[in-house]
Image (tube, rainbow, N blue to C red):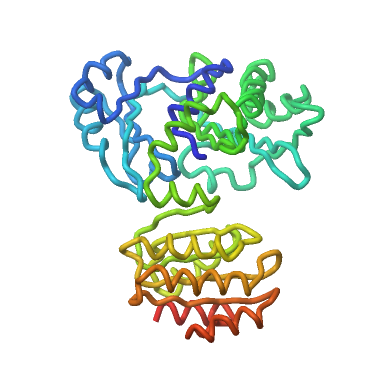
Length: 369
């Protein structure tokens, strides 16, 4: 679950990490927008709150010098649709005087298991380009925790004093565990004349952790889900609506993303990313395809399955049942099957009038054409 920035900000404040003064404005607060914004000292930064990245490049982070400008910008953002998501909240923040922009993040990694600390002396919107060659990576063993020598290494890399950086790193590490975070990113972390200030932040939480500290965030997230995401969540699918008319269904996030990229590269317009996960049964495949077919804008579906723990014959049975029950005969469905029980899966599909493809490239050409 990607947290809103204002939710991540609250977590940082609870663990003692300095942030800028700000006020949150929701769609329901639009009539009180000026009153709320007046509680923040100017000049201002007005930021749309979204559960996705890239808002800065999309013009959804704007500077303002007066309350009139704040009101105009914020009203223009509230209710706006971007990336399949509606802007429900706007954060009006104090524009901090920044001397230097830094980058800090901590993320949970699995091989080997632990926490990866990343630090760069170049932060901001183009951090990937600016940090190239200058990114420090430190692996933190969860059994040992954050050690003093790690703090000293990070501080030296960033040109800071260790005692200046230590409270912030310790706070980040504490937040990671107390809130079951998979990622906590400060970008930029601002060097100011009043010390370090986390003026922008991202966080991803493990929504399946059962952590009671996430209950408020999880309740807000579930309340915002549309019918597609709510049904996908019920089945344990990862579903992301997109702008096109081709649904891409696969078993595994990497496999599904590769198929989605291939469709886009071939000139197709993906309209749905749907990851079944591994070991999908016929019932799960049936539910996934019916979910894709329930979206009115979807006119074509690419199903890309590699059988391992997922059996191709189970996939085929689920697809045939879904097509029989969905009642959308005008939708083109292209299937690529390969792997365990592939021959049986192909037989089931061919008897139902579907000719499966053996290679992804073949399937992509077929679904795009």
